[in-house]
Length: 107
Length: 122
Image (cartoon, rainbow over all chains, first blue to last red; front, side):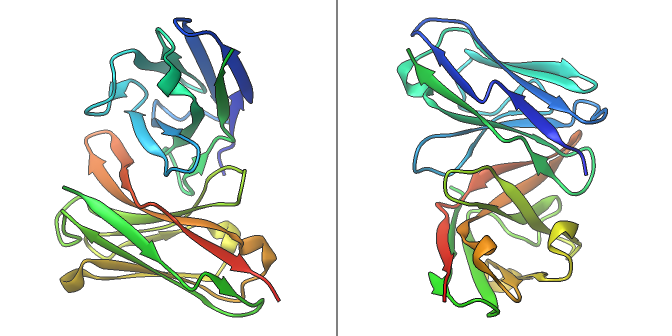
């Protein structure tokens, strides 16, 4: 199985900050990576697919990048409504696997 | 408008079989490239993918649950199902179903149900 490691596990930042979340795969996943946002008490929501494609309706302050084993989700200007846990998910090979999540808080 | 909703027993005892139903609207599981997946999340923890079923009835399972999983669908009634046999307390979680879509560069879960809580307890 491909292991997905997210860091940090907890991130505290101020409104307006540029925020970067990291996701590292245990082997090359060839950009086959999605990002999801999960707010407290809600189901996950697709933000980014195939590393850097923004899902319809998602604000443009969210962006993704990466290749090989290292991937990044960036929020260009943190907003209060971005408080959530963010998960990466690889689909290069079965079984599909998720990272353990980064919990994002407002400082 | 795509919606999905999970239903299940709420609570069951160890060694029983968990039966979950996903009732969806806004798409058809007979359409090329469409699928439904099941993902679970223990309280306060991460996401674990369990199984997918595709429009052509192809199925994929997480081998970590060995042979305990069975996924199926009823295309006519817009439902997908998941059975987990011989449950124990480690299966206590919120269970989500989600639409999975194939595109040029793979797949993603683009719509999720609200989730159903399942507790395994004696």
